[in-house]
Length: 220
Image (cartoon, rainbow, N blue to C red):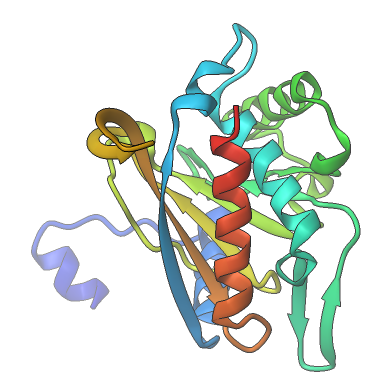
């Protein structure tokens, strides 16, 4: 293939570093039987709680950590020897860099206040984009969030990051005409799609997690 590509004037860049590791991880991920569930969430409250030093992602991390506390079966790893659940919610956030996609981890997100989550998120994202991530920054994740909404993607299905058993894909927030408390209104709504490893998670657990997350993000 390399010879043909060269004849056509193509340039081959060898896979190395993060991209090489990610490629191997994706092959491993596709070996798992996965399913996905989607729910539409009214983002009015989530957008309203934004502060100068925080972002929607920080609110999502906080909300996901709370939903995982209620549904610990998704805060877990799958292995051939069994399923390991965790008390702490270590939330990975997918970050696009020049070297490829990386997933730095906000450790013990469920034990952090909103401003502490924001501080941790800013630190790991900056390190990711500067190529300064340490092994500790990218290991120990128990669940992952991938948010492509800021890039205009309405809905997508993310691939579970083994040995984790779940990943949440967040789409763009769009104004939709919906019925609220008996009246029709324009509201900012986003689609959240949960992908699960079916060896460890069933549809009922996935649906319960999404229902709890929806309640958390929509509550005043």
